[in-house]
Image 1 (cartoon, rainbow, N blue to C red):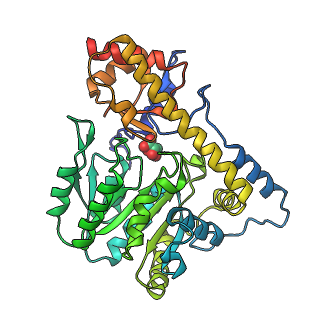
Image 2 (cartoon, rainbow, N blue to C red):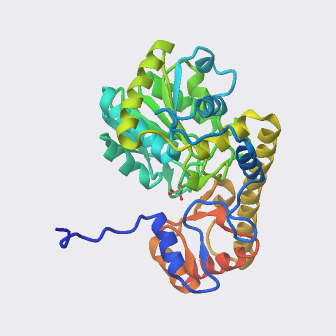
Image 3 (cartoon, rainbow, N blue to C red):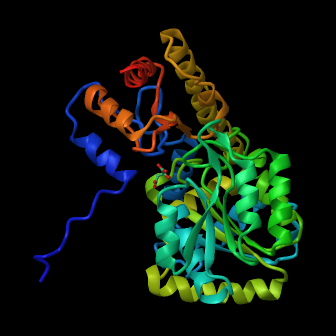
Length: 400
Ligand code: LMR
């Protein structure tokens, strides 16, 4: 019955790793998926995560019972506090509901399905470009996806005018997806002043903001600084949705741990919203896994572990920033044609190099460097040892 089935293409991001794994070259380099690597090119398990796991293993009272549909209560409360700040009025007034999700992706999907069932506007505006999975997640959730201008290839920076124009002409009440910080794939974020203008526009048109927060702490190294845009919106008393991921900032990629928060007008509304979120989650995966959420909760509720986490997080962010400088210097030293200052200006895990798909294909074929075809490179996958190889490849690609 399946003999006519058509082979589907590999995922544009995760498929890069599939191709990389097949390459037998000793010089191969994977700058595709956004996953942190050490200077030795190895995945990193944070010390604080090891410690939390030890605490969990030693606690003989722990059982493997099902979690509630909405997940681990401590984890949910602490996640809301992490993104909104402990003094957030939305938390104090109890008008927020937070449910555990399967990392950022699962949280976006649950939020999308909830909106498709209960919100009056089915159109979601996402930035152009955005993380490749957004369109699929929201389309399959039942929303209709449209884009707003975000990135200006000429400046390799924000197309702020385009953003204001496109959102300005979107229908009242639309859902607007915003990257909370460290925009993926461009590494280009609005300034706080621009965020304030975006907030005013969004509130004046009664849009519903939906934040994707996958990199809190990765952009600046500070958890609070990276949460500022979300807090700006929550601070005005209006509604919003926030999907959080602990994949990058705690290095818990494969644990699939994240959260969806919906900030409402009153505590009563929030509790009714939560009752409906349960109806979305139960038939989808019943209830979320316990281990990753327990690690996060253990770290967030223990001040020593929390402080240690912030130090390790800052070290990851700083190493990425140092890679930006090293790559920029290596291209300058080679006299590579073009302005490469955007490598240092862009923030977070990625640089949107401006290389086109032919140049990317050339670098993969000749230099065994793997990256997404839009020219995005994961700075977290680079090390001092591999910067010269990447700089050689970029130089060859733009001068051929
Ligand atoms: C990425 O953009 O590389 C990450 O968010 C990983 C993923 O799931 O695509």
